Structure formats: structure tokens, C-alpha cells
Image (tube, rainbow, N blue to C red; front, side, top):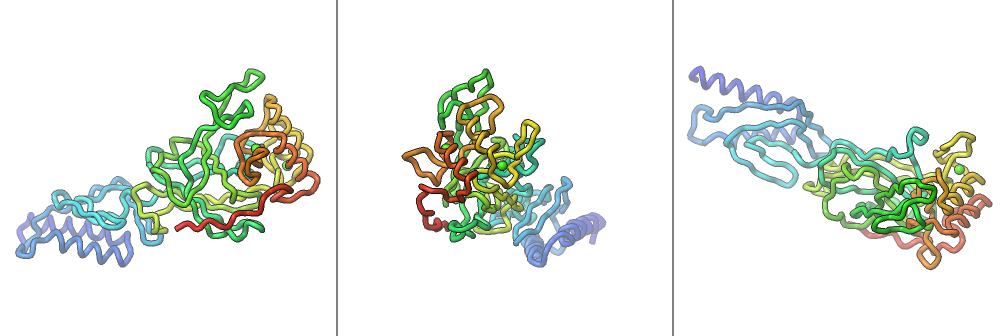
Length: 341
Ligand SMILES: [Ca+2]
Ligand SMILES: [Ca+2]
């Protein structure tokens, strides 16, 4: 080898070593394939300059998919695309855009009093990775009877809509201001469907509140994010799960002597009834609608929160205080579990 060739070969070995140290057997095979692709059959020496440009990223293995946090490239070797990997500039880089590393977090609007921010009929979260369009999947992990037949169902959060925090209406343009001179702080909410909507920048949206018939008191749910360019059927493409467990039926707030007193405490007491009544009256300092909206309006489907606080929300809360369990009197039987792909 000429000195230049030796240097190039050393560079290549260095690149391969970095690559091999990080990856699984399948990646090794693909790395060898990448080398083979880059070397013309007739060449006795390597004619392509290999180098690595590493932005400090980490390649994470999770169920067969990978994320390259940095950039690894071989100029002029072209690009190829596969199912969930790409050859970026000649180097195999699994899922450069695939697999979202940051799980969603519980929504933070009620901090510092509510570190987990669990609710009753809404799942509230904030996605990470601002600027990344993707999907959010909810897994029904462990639901109490009679919704336990839904366990294992996975659905996607639909495109969120703006709902009005105040004024007793679900939606408006603009939403009405609160009484008492308080600013109207509206919120984003969305329901669930089998198919994902158009990819959406969930992190930029801030807090999102999900409502659905299957989001019930005591239910446990996993929330995962996936980049919009990824194959949905590959589990490794999803972020780690944010697990949220709902509080008990009509448990809006904690029974405490300080204000604001936000965290649910696992009991439905007179303070919860008072809280939903205050919300119904739209009194200053009331709880957020996503806490107090525990059922649908008269004439609607009781199983689905309706983004309104009616006297029926108050009535059901009072029923829970008196011992009713969910689903309460007047609730239709649960729907059959949705059959999602
Ligand atoms: Ca309570
Ligand atoms: Ca309601």
C-alpha cells in the first residue's frame, strides 16, 4: 500500500471499529455489506476516503431499531433507503429519523402541587423533541372491569383541537373569558383513533389532554411517541413509555387545607364535589376543566367527556362521594374493544 492508502485504510478501520463497538450482530453484517458496496470489485486498494463525523450522538438499540444521534458519513457514496434504515452518504445509519428517544412527560400545568398530574377522564402529557413531527400512541395497559376487555388495545392520538377553559362551552372562536376578570386559558385536547392523523409537532403544542371512552378511573396507560417517518409496526421505533394511572372516580383534588390544593388523593370527598361545583359556577381559582369534566352532557354519551361542565358532572361527582362506582348510573355499557391494526 502507498502511504496514502495506508492512512485511508487506517481511517476505515477506525470507522469500522467505532461502528462495530456500538452495534449488534445484525449491524455488523450490514457494516460489512456497506464496505462491500463501497469497494469497486476491480480495485486493489480502497479508493474512497472514509471518515467519521460524530456529533456526540449515541446509537440506541431497542427492539431492532436504532437512532444515530450524530452523523456518520462517507461522502460520495450515495444514499440508499430501506425499511427502517438508510445508507446515509454510504454508511448504514439505522433510523436517523426513526425512533424518538424522549418519552412524553406528564403535563406540568399544575405543578408544583401535582408532580404526576393524574386525572380521571383525561390523559395529560407533554411530548419532547420540539420540531419533530410524529404520532402519539396510547396503549390500554390495565383497565378495571368492565373495561378490562380493552386491555392491550393500542390507538393513536388524533389531531388536537382547542377547547375553551371557561364559559361553559366546549369550543368557541375566540373562547369566552372567565368571569371575575381572569384570563381565559384554553387547552388542547384530542381523542383516540385506530389510525394516526397527519404527523404533528406534539412537543411544540405543549400540554395535550386525551379523552376517550376507554380512559377511565383507575386505568393504566402507556403513552409513546414515534417519528412520523417511521414504520409503525416496528416496536423499537417507539419512545420509552410514559405510564399514567388515573385516579379514582370523581377524585378531582386533594382534601387539604392549603390552596391551591390540586393532587387527587384517591378519595372522592366533599371537597371534590365543591371543586366541580365551583368549576360549574366558573368561580375564580377553580380547577382545570380536564379535571372537572368527568362525563358527557345530558343527551350525549355519558361515557365520553364533552369539554363542558354541566350540572351532571356535579351530580356524578356527588354520586361518587355517596359511593357510586364507575361507570355510574345512567352510563351505557362499554363499547366492544376497538379492533385496531
Ligand atoms: Ca379527592
Ligand atoms: Ca362534562
